[in-house]
Length: 445
Ligand SMILES: *[C@@H]1O[C@H](CO)[C@@H](O)[C@H](O)[C@H]1NC(C)=O
Image (cartoon, rainbow, N blue to C red; front, side, top):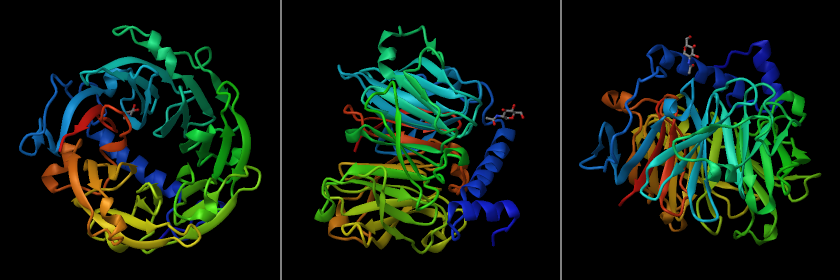
């Protein structure tokens, strides 16, 4: 049962979502979990050792980490990337015009920049401090050569940073960039935000979970960044209330009524909302769909090139033992979105591991899931086309970056992995862990 305090009621009314937990409640749960973790010394200086050499996954182990078919290529601790809070969050990648690979690694006190060299090793190049205060939430996406960084920190706004600046940094002399003179732009039209979404082809950044001052009810706050030095606020979708995360695409799927439209799949706390944002001034909600087990509809990704299916993760169903997640094994919901107006929940996939799910991205039929305490889980979802129940989905590899819960068989808690970036051509996968730092991993079936 939910405690209906005045504040809780106000938040529920504000977000328009009555069934699921609210963001305020979820944040409280996480802050409590991280405070307890902090008590154990998890964020202490020198708590974790630096990695001495690449470590292949052999007989289910890469050093102290449980794994299967995923090698540990390199690793840098948060303390080695200039963070004084030593606590990580989101991560994204950038590839230069000559094919060099870089990462923007979120931390509570800023974003660290790393390069992954040809041999897979990591070099720390510098960092961009938070625009205001520290916050557990920092999120970024890249369009072209620019990274767009938002945070839940008060009045943070959106930092626009030119990743090409990293090309001038010499290894061994990391640079702390200035939050005034080194930014391409700082957009102040919203204060805090929870997530940053990008529709690359349209130079569109969508900030979600923005605060009350942004006047968008936490929905899609849309920015045209065709000129990165001058982001322009072009519209807001607030009809569905608070949006926690979203995937936006130029639609090329099987529902031909929407071909070429700009479609966003919004993960809205208690529903999957499909919206058409082609017109920024009057975006349209195509459908809003609830499901059994909805506890905190968090994130998801389209699963196939024809855009028939998507995979949805609910962040609280495991901990709350709700619906199909009652056994606490990470539960992924399968949704048939071949008719955008009538999505159908067709089944679930359960990981062999007990853990909460966070972010996942699908590349070539494999979903790279960042599942907190059970780490990176790679699942093959190519069977969906013939079996939408999910029974054909198989785990093909994993790397568990959080050994602390291994002895108890995993825990549904907010520890371990925050996110992964699986889009580098080289196959290098970046994983940002909350406690330890950034890992370069390689799927090696
Ligand atoms: C951990 O606790 C200490 C002492 O209260 C505090 O200074 C520090 O900011 C906390 N670290 C994190 C990452 O929460």
